[in-house]
Image (tube, rainbow over all chains, first blue to last red; front, top):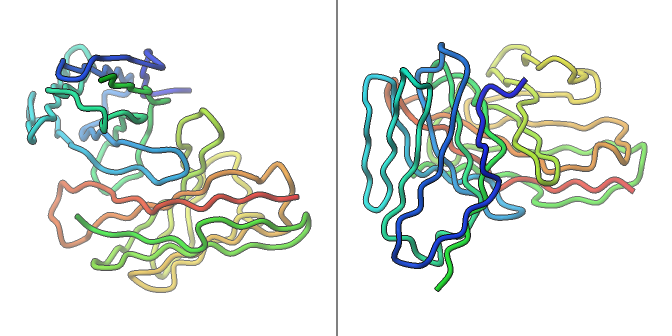
Length: 112
Length: 118
């Protein structure tokens, strides 16, 4: 069963605007959440993470928000750039040393 | 960030042959590495957890005799697909966590290996 869900398979955003990618999870044991960016035929590249003791983590243009009561997290990219076009995977784990549970990914297209 | 390499990046083999994929952490040590598999347009699915110096832990539905994992050192894990069949064609990705980065640290992924079994 899918414990991490990304319900939007694709998202299109204009360059310069904000991209918001959403992720929901069902396992209350998950304590550590990550976002990865992936291009076809390449391994995922780590973007940003957040632990459950925080509700926000920011790194440059990327901000991750965590709403633990709703079991929901989101990745905000602002401003969006054409180079951000890729598939974004949300991942969760009960402990950072454990294997990751991935969502199915959201394909982001940033248009000029 | 930390670097994980995989070799080969792509391999084509005949049905019935075995293929070995290497995963190396280049600038850090990893007692645990993970092997994932991705089918087209699907998420990454965990196959097994590779532990240095001990047996790998396989996920339900993954045949341990078919997907042999050896974690011989703190920087190297290998996945051998034995007697490969066309249905084993997939994208295989490994990941590792830097032991020295503290309690909360990301897993870093290799670039993946594309396996095509004819």
